[in-house]
Length: 340
Image (cartoon, rainbow, N blue to C red):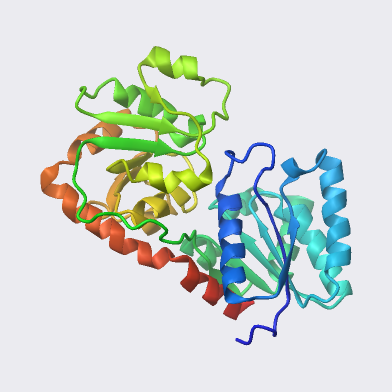
């Protein structure tokens, strides 16, 4: 593809200016894409859809719409990258694109799109049908979503959670019973299960929790009272360095797409313990790159932690390291560009 064929207008969430440590998966993935496009010399401009970077919600939407109206000039393709607000922004993008004869793509982050679509009724279902069927190209994070939405739009493709291997680990890794959770500290990430599991492990195990506390039922005082090691939030630039100090990643979530922390763990050769969810089952091979447990099961989480030892860790670590190749940022970005 020639670099001057497509002039992109990218709509997506940029880093929270006031609280950069609160960087969800969508923010990280959008930043990764911008970095790859810059490396490739692609002509693009950006509209920030992170409402936290505006004065208030009303000002945010008005500003985004005004930017869309004016920045589409000279652009040939409008690419919306969204996690939750794709209904309103998707309709607005389609409307303006049709007026000014632009191509449109939607990249939907996360793994809940099919469930949200099936639960919609009436006008909401009609509007979602409009977005998914009339958008020129759709991208989803998981293969089961690609299969699902291909029935509505045949121009539907896989664009997984991606990362760049920025830190080269020393391989083979050794096993020292060091386990870590790095994500938003909220109940649906399995925090309660981690807390209870820690109480059943002896002192030879290290289990540390990192991440911004997003749920009022948790606090530094709470974790201290539970005897659990909470280490605070990390800047996104510090995640890999900190991850490299551990052996296994814990993520006993109740719902997920392709968790970025799993991909980052793979880049360093860290196997994972996570849950039997449809999207996660696509990227974690049981007893090869990690272990899969039932959501909300403390017993299975404890058994999974205790499963790892010197005899099985080396092979699982190597398998995780090799699995990262499927999620390498440059390769997947080039496929994305070919399709838009």
